[in-house]
Image 1 (spheres, rainbow, N blue to C red):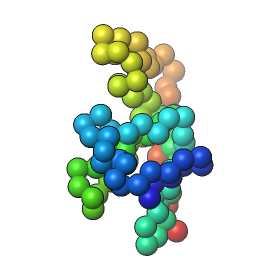
Image 2: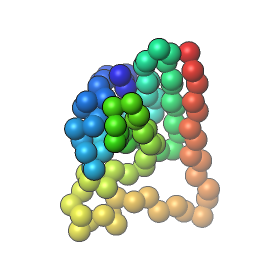
Image 3: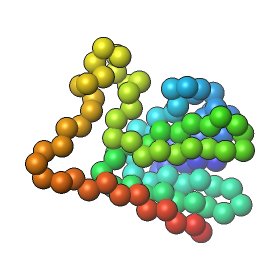
Length: 96
């Protein structure tokens, strides 16, 4: 099970999203719960994308933009352009 503070997804739901993956919007912390609990905390990204090619594996990607959230002709509108100042993007992974 993959869960955030207010929603959870089964591996079947993640696989059903197919090529577009599954967006977990406006989330900085995710929990992957199996025999142990893997906690992912991100900074600077804002969302996650989940996808899985097989039932025994899940890919969890921190993202700042989900390209399928806009019409494909408007893809350039969704990307973040960095200013002269650096921005910090972090991912922290812990196991409990």
